[in-house]
Amino acid sequence: MYDGLKGFTDFYPAEMAPRREVIDTIEETARRYGFRETATPALEPAEMWTDKSGEDIVDELYDFEDRGGRHVTLTPELTPTVARMVVARQQALSKPLKWFSTRPFWRYEQVQQGRYRELYQTNADIFGSSDPDADAEILAFAADSLTALGLDGSEFEFRVSHRDILGELLRSFDADVDVPAAVRAVDKRAKVDETEYVDLLVEAGLSADQAREFDDVLLAGDRDRSALTDFADSEALAAAVENLEAVLAAAEDFGVREYCDVSLTTARGLDYYTGVVFECFDASGEVSRSIFGGGRYDHLIEAFGGQPTPAVGVGIGVMNSTLPLLLQVHDAWPGEGITSDYYVLQVGDTRPVAARIARELRERGHVVETDVSGRSFGAQMDYADSIDAETVVIVGERDLEDDEITVKDMASGDQTNVPVEAFPGDRERPTDDEFAQ
Image (cartoon, rainbow, N blue to C red; front, side, top):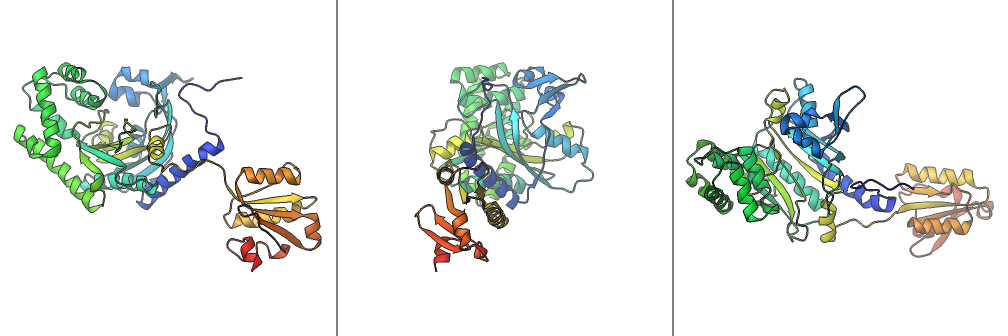
């Protein structure tokens, strides 16, 4: 007997059904926005991460040397992969590009609630537009995905920030600040106590007093952006503030401003983010960790050897993530279980007729099961009940002698004999009520 690996999850059919519904809903939302589906490999050169984040990142990867002597890794996220894809065909691709995909990722990290070593995300990215409308459309797609899943605006919130605002504020201090390290410290603000947070900023180059002053300015800027430009006279800072306001204005026109709260202590930990970033949270606070996040990464394509190409995207965890927790907290999680529209039950030597009926029902798009094990009448009825079949079509030798079959509504228990040649006939959804008329 073998046990599964820690951080990896098996999903049986009844457990997978609601997850498939969540994935389908989010993907259908992406398609309505004009995102086109891509597929990407599970393995990539590990250098795609170590070159940008240092060798320490390997502690978080499932990396190894393959038989060709290459240092490879199971992909921990999608953004570097799609950046590589854009670079490979940059001249031939018409922009803006709008891509999405749903696939697994692997991260060797501490397993906890809502965080596993294998997770599934639906990613949506826009390449080739620096316009605030692109940022707003990503926010709108994310919000529409959640509302399509049954949530409303009182149950989730987007905490919106701007990486360039953080960077320019840090550069305004009379100190030799490691800006990426300081931004990573901001990203940990909600996860550590105040003393540790200040210590992290001090390690990045600020004094303790400057660290507290910096934090105070961020909190003031949440309420009033003029507090930012009053603190530091910088054209770059003013431009970043203006960009943030432009994105929020576009979000208003896109109908999603109500979900957005400015939160400048929301930083996103990855160094490649540049402009607007955001994270989704449970508005009730019952799910304490971020549900998902995204943002702008305007320099990554160039860093991968391509032409300068602005980009913005979001990654929504759909399995082994905190999104199922959010949906469960707010009673929006799809019901678990297996359902079928029809079960075609065979009694005696009736396979040709039963197979014809099953085939015609499937051609109409219905979910149809039939016996493949030679089971008894009772065993087939028990199975039909176990898969929550809505209707059972009984194809029995005695009924066929009279050129009939029996159609049974499993909810009411009502059943009707109908002519075999008339079933399923021209009706879109044949039921016993229709045949009884």
